[in-house]
Image (cartoon, rainbow, N blue to C red; front, side, top):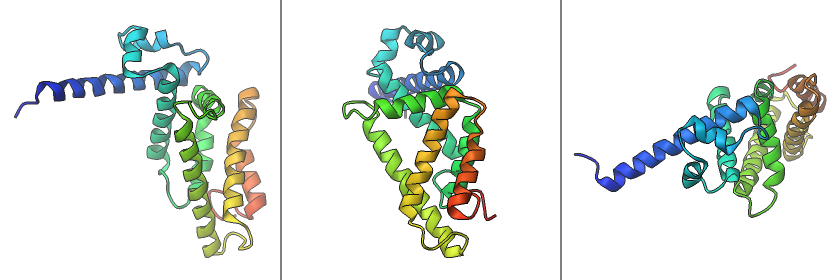
Length: 200
């Protein structure tokens, strides 16, 4: 049975939205947040800027969706939101050193999205909550296995690891010689008595 006209229009619109998002992800990864214009993204998909804004309400909304897409790709590449997120986070930080444009976008978006009216406000808030909860579960699992001190508060460790990850990315944006994953692993080893990627 053939699709009716509204369904075909919806499918076509969803496909174009996906095309724009993929183009934006590639442009930002290559050029960074500041150097990625809406016009450049529009050119990549054969639209005008107004055409892009037909599918995304603003550049801010498009950039928020790019960060969502980056997270989706990272979950697929590094095992997703799994029990032992400490090891996954360490590998993700290492990978981020190869995509400075996306690190720049994420760092900028986290600050801008503090405003409740920002398109990414709820996403960033929920992302942090999920990250902290899952990191805490990783700490508890290691505590049960006896590889992490039992007296550590898993939530405190989770928030410290999150702050360490984001802070290292900010420092790295200013100085590309910073070994983000190396410092992250060393700091977590001091805190936990074990490396993020496994027992010492």
